[in-house]
Image (cartoon, rainbow, N blue to C red; front, side):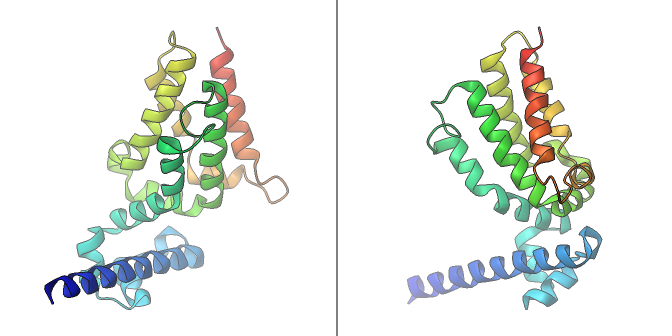
Length: 193
């Protein structure tokens, strides 16, 4: 009986998590980051505000969880997937492929990025996704150009992942402009010297 009860609670928690993240997505689409509050998310998801608060802690935690959800597959591919995203590809090819994938996530989630930036402004560099991307980019830069400050270059490249900038550089007639420009910037950094 206890095992069955635990499974039911886990299933409920999973269902609630999905409902809360879907509600957050809907509110972002309807009114941007300012439209997302724990009260609104809870009401739309059909759960209590306490459920949202206990699971995510704050509005920032909620947005962080949604952003991590959107990039989960990419993190897995970088860590354990086949080349060129995963280990084994030449560094330059791996960098360009990674930026293509990360850029696509950013282009498709610019409103979420903007809301996340505002909510997490005080601890941007402590964000687990940011730390993961930074470590990966640092390693790629160091592998290709050990003479450069890979730590700084990774921060510099990630700094352009600004939701407002991405929206500005992603016109309907050229939806991959941001990513293409990001890749050109990375190549220019690698080729200087």
